[in-house]
Image: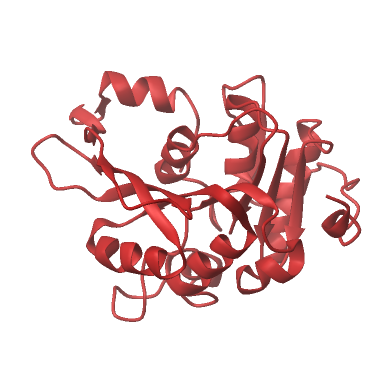
Length: 261
């Protein structure tokens, strides 16, 4: 880990809240997270990705585009991984993520690195991670209207990185037989699969997420294996609501009382 630990800035900043920030209880091991509802805070997609991802004992994990650090914190709470690193380009999010790590006394388990996804393999090196997680921007220039608030626009549209940047760099930092976990939108699934196979990531598990059992999927969870053979399992769909504002039993078990916005 020394290669990027040497690059890491001190995480000894105080956890005092800035205007617009709040501290939310994650209902996991007493962990909390600092968020700013006026900027960008985590949603259900991040929680579902952290539940879908498998992290084994002793494994090292990189979360690309970590935002305020929700996925590394949840994975540390839910798994036996050895170390978790979040990579984020927006300085304001980096600062909040680092203060959340410190707030939870996790500085020995979680690093937050300020940097560009497009340069991930240059920052961390090639073939060094067991697991990569990513909740990338869903929309390219052909999809939707960009939010005038830049932090939200960057999180939702491919302004600072493309799908290819994410897949290429994720594949580069993974060890052979390492795993990438991604949450995305179903309408881009063919593009995602084609991009993954181009960079020797073979999709192994795919799970669609439906808001209601009679509505089409609005999210898809994907596990891909670096250097794997061609064989994919389509898992049973995950349904979020059994009726308006009432979660299904599975969703309650996965989502718990974690606070998103």
